[in-house]
Each structure stands twice: as C-alpha cells, then as structure tokens.
Image 1 (tube, one colour):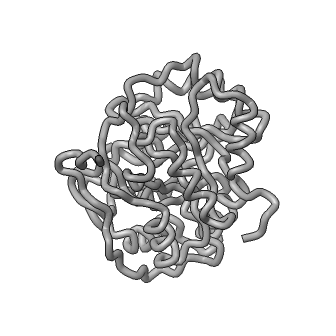
Image 2 (spheres, one colour):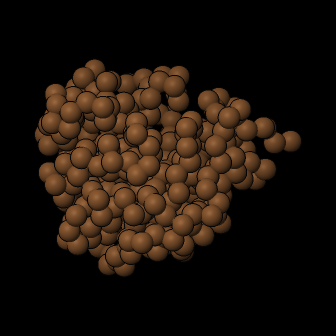
Image 3 (tube, one colour):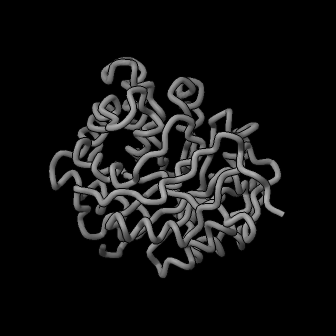
Amino acid sequence: MTAPKTPGWLDWCAAPSTPDFRLPPGAVDAHCHVFGPQAEFPFAPERKYTPCDAGKDQLFALRDHLGVSRNVIVQATCHGADNAAMLDAVRASGGRARGVATVRPDIGAARLRELDAAGVRGVRFNFVKRLVDASPREDLTAIAKKIAPLGWHVVLYFEAADLPELEGFFGTLPTPLVIDHMGRPDVTKPVRGAEFDRFLSFAGRHDVWVKVSCPERLTVTGPPYTDVVPFARRVVAEFPDRVLWGTDWPHPNLKHHMPDDGLLVDHVPRIADTPERQRKLLVDNPMRLYWPGETA
C-alpha cells in the first residue's frame, strides 16, 4: 500500500517547453533527484514529506528533452539513508549519471567501496531544519573522514542565515565542499551586501564549489526569476571554474509554483553570459568533479 502525497504537494511539470537556449554538447545537470517509484522503492518512515513518484524513466526523458548529456542524482531526503532508488537510476544510466548519497556514520569501508564502484562521488549533509531533525557534527565529521580517501566531496544544504554558526564547522571538513543553491541567499537583500559577501568570502577561503541552481526556490518575484539573476551572475563571475548548474528536478517541496524545466534552461545565459562561462558551468566543471579524466 502506498502512502498519499503530502497535502498541497505540487507535481513536476509533465510537459516542459523546448528551451530556446541550446545547451553545449556534454552539458551536465549536476543537481536532480528521483522519488521512488514508491511501490518499488518505499519512502523512509522518518521522512518529512511524501512526494509524487518521479523515477529514473521520467528523469532520463527530461534529460533527453532538454539536451542534457549527463546527470548527477542527489539522494532525496524522502528516502533517508536508503540509496536504492538513486543507485538504481545511476546504474541504469549507462555511465551517464553519478550519485550523491546519504550515509550513516557507522558505514564501513567495504560498503563505501561498493558505492564508489556504483558511481557515487559524494555525500550530502542537510542542515535545513524543516527537512531534517538534526545534523550532529560529530557524526558528519566521522563520515567525512571515511569518504576523504575515496576522493569524494561533501554536498552542503543550508540557509544563508545559518552560515555564521556553521562555517567554522564546514571549514574543518577534510574534503571538497559543494554548496547547494548558492547557500539559499535572501534575494531581497543586496547582492553586494554583508550576507552574500560573507558567503562568497567563505567560498573563496576553502575548496568550495557552488551550484547556481534553483532560481524557482529563491525567487520572491517569480518567473522569470530576475531577482535571482544578480546573485547567480556574481557567483559565476567570481568563481568561473567552481560553479555548477542543475535543474533540481522534480523540485521537491515547492509551495507556490512548479517551474517549467525548459525555462530553467533558458535561465542559464542570463547568469553565464559568454560561451566560455557557459561551457565551464555546464560541461568543464561538472566533468572535472564527477568524471575526471573523461571527455564530454
């Protein structure tokens, strides 16, 4: 028996438009998820939400529709530390996907090697309080020490207001760091104000990569997300070799609107305004991080 969706849940856009912007060959969607299907991959009992189904077949259909070549599939919090759905999608991709897992601190070296062989290249630490009960730092430090020898990275999800209390801990982690959605800035504040300056200063002092993703999650004004553009454009300009882009499909926990993924592709040239910056953002950087030594 499957559980009903969270009341008010917004399903992903089943008929996205065809983008006007043509992605360069080899483009990577470096942040997306799979949900279930629930009948095959049950959701975690401790989850904070119950989404609609959004499996690998739908993800790969979107990949082909948008002109994306590869995906990085990030473990969704609704599946907890059961990475089965994500791993199934990565394996089914024929080498065109990598994974970011959620693991517990007692994971052993043999299991980590199995995940590495399956295509996992990082773990995600979630500090968004409405999505997780707690993020104990001792446990996360133990995990980071275990994955460092594999050359993996840590993906961090947090909100801008929480960075001051977290950045000291983040700076102690012995791996590269990948930050989701520009650290969720408050886009009603100045793009050159103290809060965003602090975030970029943190990124500049450490081995940090930044995803300029999720304008639909950060916007106050709504599509076409003009209020988010200056923030993403500044990140791309200041860290051209350490930025990544992703759709965030199937867009969990949105409350106000569900984006058209074709229009999210059309957002790219607004934030990466030259072919060189676009190629770094979409191809060179994610290939270097997730498929080192391979050509797009």
